[in-house]
Image (tube, rainbow, N blue to C red):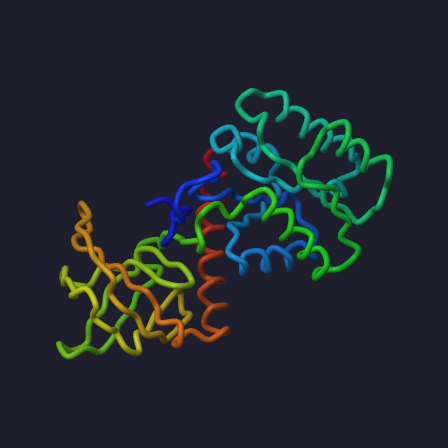
Length: 268
């Protein structure tokens, strides 16, 4: 299951992607790191990187991305104009969408990027602070349909990265979390146990690289997966999720996705 797959996809329509678009921030300023967290909390799939060479090669494989470039990085801003143009000129990546992030409100630069290079996602001046910048970027991502038809970002969990346990009438059950979103998960129970659809799992403890969250879940289905046995799909009861618990889940999801992307970038 791809990390961009979602729990619930709306009916197809208007050509909107089922899985949304990955959002990259290249050489992000400190305030953008704060903004990226806000965007992730809004269920956008957000990544950061400081290697424009590897990012360009990755975009050849996955061009349906939004990429925001910090043009203040380095001594020569022209490097970023050339870099964006080179990607524009490549048939494999000519529909990558770009935005510019800067601390300098320069009209000449704005014209160069918006009019000459035709960046779609704006010329965003971050000196206005994290809250205002996040507001602008949220509108930009919505306008570019970055969320797609999905509602929640889901991350595949590496082996042994996340586990769970709960007490049931059959005793204490536990297993491995296979993928996770802020509203649910799929998991495999130790011993290949299959739990009946509709079963309520009260006070289920999720353990994610030392982070512990206690929720109540409901089994909504299961399926067999080659080499993994029975995979059980569990949705969390909304009443069992506080803001703090959601924040912990989203922080783990984002770190997991970023680690997976860092690995992918290291291979291109």
